[in-house]
Image (cartoon, rainbow, N blue to C red; front, side, top):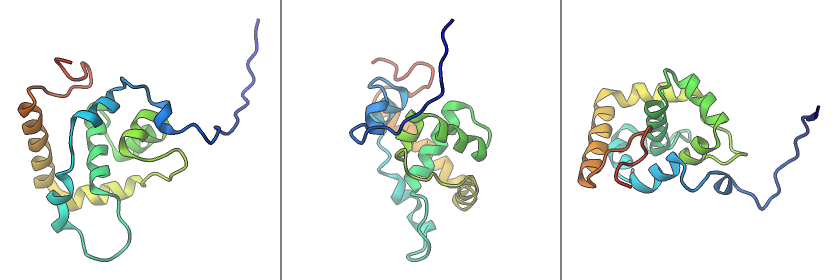
Length: 145
């Protein structure tokens, strides 16, 4: 009967999170197919010109997509998933050594954005998907591909 010791070593410097997410992973496919460049313009009026650094709004809305695709019920649970799943961490753009946003920050951003931003965000995603002739689903990836 074999034994397995729990002995972890730091990753070599030449291995990145980019290397650890498989090529055909759902979030890698989503990243390549769903252009979220419209997000900053969508919410720019909700940010002050100065102040503390904030969570990038595109990162925040990527996190909202993760909530949708993973069936997550809270920002606290979301950030546990992001810290645990390499592909989700990669999708939202945080390297292994970077601190993730606190769940309470996400709650404040959600409240500031309000329903109108979420509605516009998801409507734009549906429009983009229809324009490309496909809808993005977690179960089946990107249909037709």
